Length: 212
Image (cartoon, rainbow, N blue to C red; front, side, top):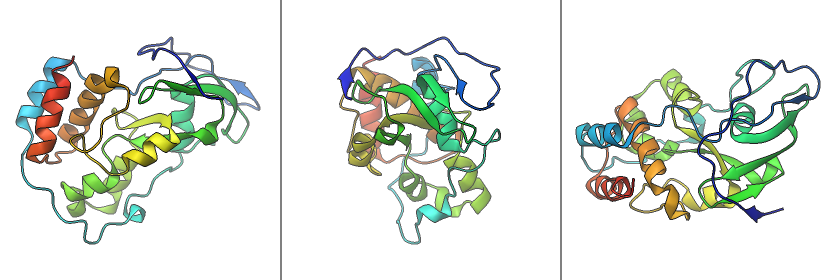
C-alpha cells in the first residue's frame, strides 16, 4: 500500500544479527553509505573532467554483472533491501518476507519488496558513456554491486523506471527536498570511479548542490 511520510535521512543501524531462518533486521540505515558533505561534493565536482558523453555502442547490462552473491545467502539486491528497509524480516534465502521501504525519490512507502527497485544512482548506461566502456568486466561488476559508496538505493520501482539512464540535467527525483542528497551521491560515484560529466550535467549538479 502506498502512503507518504517524511524521509528519514538517518536511522538506528541494527547490526550483528545472524541470518538463521526468519530474521528480524530491525530499523536499517535509510540512506546509502559514503554520502559526502556539500563542501566535499562541490570540490569533487569541480575536479571532474567535463566532456561530451561517449557512444552507447557495444553497451549491454550483461557487461555489468549485478546482483552477485554477498554472503549469508544474500545477493546485492537483497543486501540493499535489508539495509534500506525498516523492520525487515527475511527467510533463510535472504528474501524479505516483511518490512517497509521509504523511497526518498518520491516520499512513498512500500510494504512489498516487489514494489521496490534497487537504483544504480549513476546508471550503468551513463557509466558506459562516461568511461566504463574501457573497463574490464571485473571492474564493471564491482561498480554494479558497490555497497560501500552511495551508488545503490532502494526506491519506488516505477520512479526508477522513469529515470532510466538519464543524468541529472534530464531527470531529478520528484521530491525536490532530496535533490541536494541526490546530487551529492551522483558526484561521489562519478568522482570515485573517475567518470566524466557533460556540461549540462555539471550545471544541473551545481544547481542541485546549491539547495543544500
